[in-house]
Image (cartoon, rainbow, N blue to C red; front, side):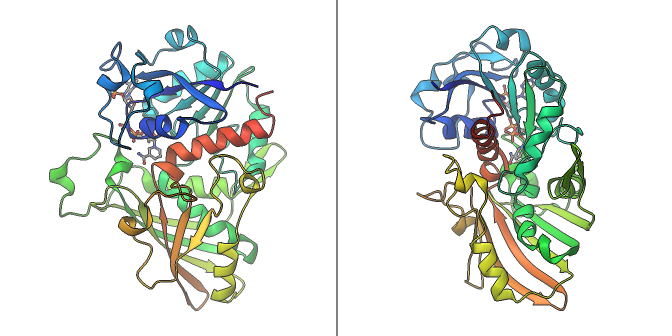
Length: 351
Ligand SMILES: NC(=O)c1ccc[n+]([C@@H]2O[C@H](COP(=O)([O-])OP(=O)(O)OC[C@H]3O[C@@H](n4cnc5c(N)ncnc54)[C@H](OP(=O)(O)O)[C@@H]3O)[C@@H](O)[C@H]2O)c1
């Protein structure tokens, strides 16, 4: 089978740019259509985009004409798969229309995440939730979402502990400015500052965490039944969401055993050797002052932003404390979506 022709919706924003970067030379997908707002319509991609995610815009994309994000315009192109990096408010209708027209949609937007029949898929964590797409009413098309950026890290800290009985989770985040988008937060508001509020983020962390870690029963997800309490804070860091997590666990497990379990955690993307799957989904750092966004997010061979870093594991009675770091625009956004598409392809969902 040749490469599937991909359309990136919202291609000029931060997540859209990461899609373009990650999909360069991808073995299964090739970006041939790009869309953005009316502001960018008709321009060459390189002129419409303030490129910030690597040194160069990929040659294969820089001369593409940016289309307006309109289903008729997109359906006139030769498109086999859609990656969406649109604001939620814009994503709802267009994603549904393109799915109805028979296209597979892999979305970062929150618009369809909490629909009963749409999986919030993280294939290392809840691969079975992929089954939900079979019950969707989009004809030959379907919608698969990934979680919001902070939740995409949190669930890696929780999943390996679920078998010991999680009673409650308290999480406090220190979230990077890139999480707010290319024009999301002004420098005057964030430089030398910390803002203890991110609209809707705490609610999303609660509902998405319980959904992702929930059980699939008779074609429906029964959300996990432990309490999640979230406080979300914006900090003056470019990339990387750090999270302080306190987990109340029923069974007492030695910290050393937990470290071992986290370091050895892996899932179907690893056994299938999917192109975007990291060798180690979780790495525990032993230094007492790690993980740090500045030191622990550099992209290098074997760690292209898809590995979640955990450190400062310690016990306080029945509670386990840890710090966790996730690359918000890669594992928390574009990389997560590309991995979902590779997984769906490998599992035969496109057939
Ligand atoms: N940033 C993160 O860490 C992160 C993580 C997880 C999920 N997400 C989600 O991913 C999506 C994209 O986030 P982002 O950070 O990449 O945002 P962004 O940098 O603000 O980019 C938004 C993109 O959408 C386009 N757009 C804006 N309004 C539009 C409209 N009315 N019609 C059509 N296109 C429109 C923009 O085009 P123009 O350039 O023409 O304005 C741009 O391409 C959001 O739903 C966000 O919640 C983001």
